[in-house]
Length: 170
Image (cartoon, rainbow, N blue to C red; front, side, top):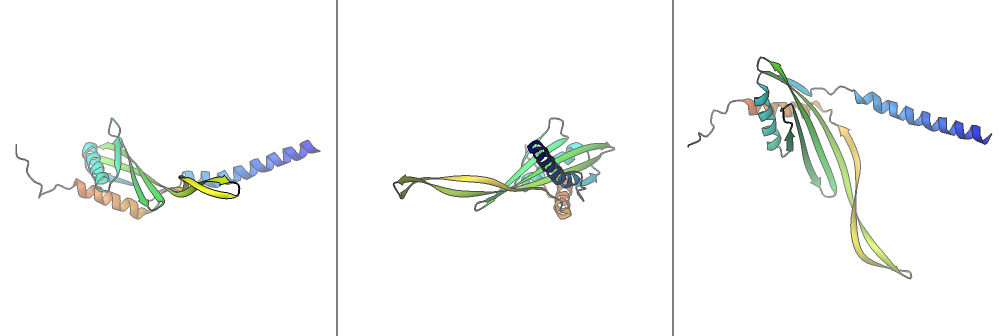
């Protein structure tokens, strides 16, 4: 009888975990509206415009050796809350001076809390130091179409020829 209860409990736990995972799995391939754009420029030029846009907005970026992938992060701190925005940009050369940009963005939020260390002398707490702990409170994919629209608008602005550019003197 005890063995039957253990098996039943194990099956119940597995069913609960699998049902929770199914809702997460359904979101795995959810469409992200507006996260790609096709531009009438070569891949090298578009890649430079993406890096310039990211730098203007304070992102730290890395580029793959072949220039097909750009990863960027931006850290923002407000008191004890930290938000890390990560962008993955994929560049696809479609030929005929045409490039497709596919962007995936996510945000991770974490909170830091301070604690005091105590030494107990009988029933008297004596503080002797402090430490901070940080916990991730949320990680999610950015689905806001306005986020991507603004990003692509800035890339297109950086692709425009700058008529007022300073001329370099040798």
